[in-house]
View (cartoon, rainbow, N blue to C red):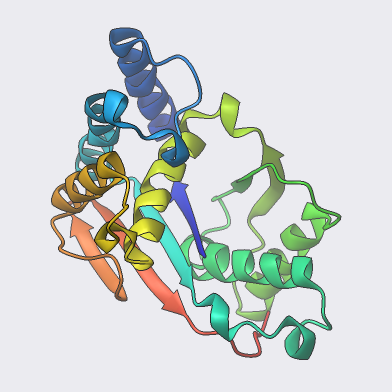
Length: 227
């Protein structure tokens, strides 16, 4: 399993939204864009879409982070009292805090709103907000998380861009591109994203710089997690 996110400020969000809306109008791609929809018929369009990574990650310093989870090592019964939802959001905490929040929380003027793709869950996202802010305080940092919100990816260009990048990372992490019946379009799009990132493989813990921006991918082996 893989989790991932894109960190943007207000100006960067407007710029990315503008680029994606221009792409949609030029290519008649008005429906939701996501990894599961990659096809031979739309491969060229998806390559153009992911080129936005290069444009904004290189020039604007937009950051993407991902967390690759080795699911065969999960033991929710031992470490989360059998609560898989609690375990799932513990992993979200790891990604959000160590990849994004911790880097920003030294400055009290920074304020962060976390937007997660909507999913059916009994977990209260306000709890994740509290955990993130409490960890900031514990580490002598400022509690900068204003809100953790569920967002419908159909209405979010950035969540759709995140889905395509993360889909490629998961595809590569599971080595699906090597299977005989592998989806040809997804194989080609993976190659294209690897080329943009200037790397040969997303399977390993990495920190690949794209000038001002960064695609960072790290693996997490399940153990008792401190929050």
